[in-house]
Amino acid sequence: MTAGIYCSRAGLVALLVEKGIFGGQITYAEHVENFPGFPMGISGLELGEKLFAQAQKHGLKTIAAEVTGLEIRGELKVVKTTDGDFTAKAVILAGGATRRKLGVDGETRLTGRGVSYCAVCDGSFFQGQKIVVIGGGDTAITEALHLTKFASQVTIVHRRDQLRATHVLQEKILSEPKIDFLWNTTVSAIEGTDMVEKIRLVNIETGEKSMREVGGVFISVGTNPDTGYVKGILPLDENAYIITNENMETPVPGIFTAGDIRHNSARQAVTAAGDGATAAIYAHKYLM
Image 1 (cartoon, rainbow, N blue to C red):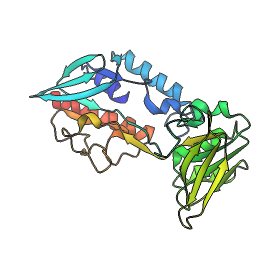
Image 2 (image 1 turned 180 degrees about the vertical axis):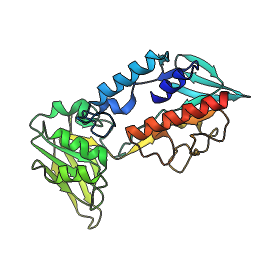
Image 3 (image 1 turned 90 degrees about the vertical axis):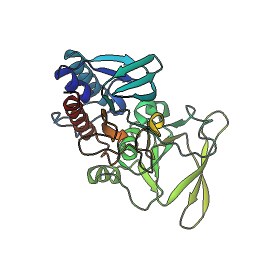
């Protein structure tokens, strides 16, 4: 969204291709407290709407479609989408990343039947139930705190013996009476007939196996970048994130990246916005 704002304000003819909600993953956050300019916080959905309105005000064109491919034809780039092909002299890739799956038995079959990747989206369906959150980063802890509004008990299952979340979030989570922890533990299977009924657990230090009855499983174990369509075109790191320099430039002239899709991103809304502004500024310089 920020790249679109900067491109449009610079007088460029810019098109934003978005396969989901305009604003990206931040729109799923119930309350954003660390984006500058909002001392009382703001919902992620409202923040996305404000950014979208600001971009449109400056003339940004948008289309709801998914990018499926990228071709280089001399100085031109052809962006292939589910709604046709678009040709441009410069492209900013800001496709972000999607929630990573555990890959255990029962996960796919029970997705939408007690297995979820978004507490804000689905938390209200678990009123009064015992649920688990798998993960230990900022997103996992934020989702666990949100789920205490609905669940009778929230158990955080984490493969390490300490959280990776920021200090502020750790203070909040450790003082929440509805939340308990299973440290050094992984989930080996999710079971249930029509809905989630229980999970199988393994202590990675002792090898001890156990079972816990739960009504819901919220998975928050990281993300995978949306870079499948640029393999072989752009350099990727070992986790498939795009490698760029500090100007958001890739080795292919005229292709830039911004946000969670790039290597070493801080994966915060404010840094994504900064990346978008930087990418747009250097895209403009490239075109000039």
